[in-house]
Length: 395
Ligand code: C5P
Image 1 (cartoon, protein in one colour):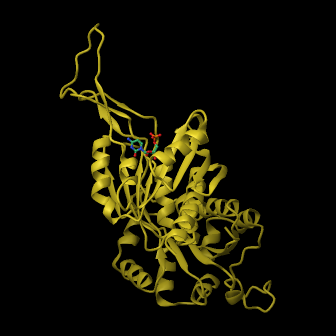
Image 2 (cartoon, helix red, strand yellow; image 1 turned 90 degrees about the vertical axis):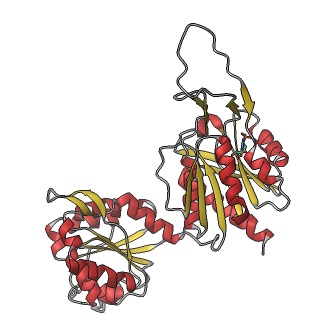
Image 3 (cartoon, protein in one colour; image 1 turned 60 degrees about the vertical axis):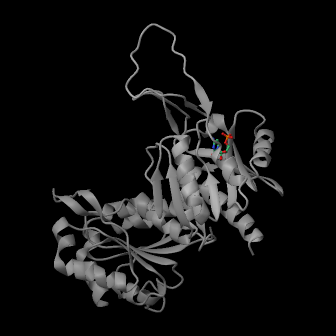
């Protein structure tokens, strides 16, 4: 990602202390952060904190003469990719909605030529007040993006909507904005997580799979502008805001969900760790434990990806191959057997549940190694590669 310039506006609210963490996260991801504080914000957190974190002096005064031409309200916003106000107090939302230019930050927002994102933070009743509702509607109509507020415990002791979105969530939203929209207008179907095949009412067989990679791929496809449908086996992951989320348990259910969606799919990415077998005649109740050997009869599950890959006119299909030895050789064999233009190979010993992995992409043109990185980064790189191959085939 090329260097992004962010103006971080901090207004008066208890959540201002979280803005310091947000600034640190943004700097860590390589963003250039210029902090502008309101007078009220300085009552909650010191400018020196932001100065140390961002490496830039903090501005707050409309009449600050540190900016050469005395035009801080114009100059600080020049070249910014986005202005993010976090926390944005009720008072500041009101100023924005009215187009007020009574201090440096509100003036900068009015004089901007880049997108404006705000993260409101205030007491629950202030957020619910009719005047704030009106202001929020006006801001949305003006094209301002609001993130949060979240619901939860507040500094005032009340519980409800009004907490500022967490710094990690805000950073993620910013990064998502900056991803190139390489899959705009395309429909992407993703399977994720394990499947679970019942033995009886409480037991079953499954694969070790956290769902992290599949969910990261779904998020990256969304960021790239695709319309995403996610079919997920049982996982604890929080799903990204996809257009359609279908939760399934068994491989058979996953197959049915895929078949129901496949005709409206341009790209199918099969990340799920589908159980290879299911149990014939599972018990409806719970099997009583005794000292005897229990024999289970297993039958092979359908290969969902192979089924899709061998259709008369399949979507662009991407498979995953988790292997423990001869990784590339086995993955390439799978790619050919399942008729896939692209397969993603990884080492099963380091992949399951881990946050960082290495991926090897195998396609008609050869191999490409995506050096070890967190799954979100890998998912974005993979989506970039898929977009490249897809767009070459469909110019
Ligand atoms: O299990 P295997 O190594 O063959 O998985 C390779 C790819 O095939 C993965 O993308 C997986 O999601 C898919 N697959 C499937 N249905 C199965 C088994 C695997 O879609 N029954």
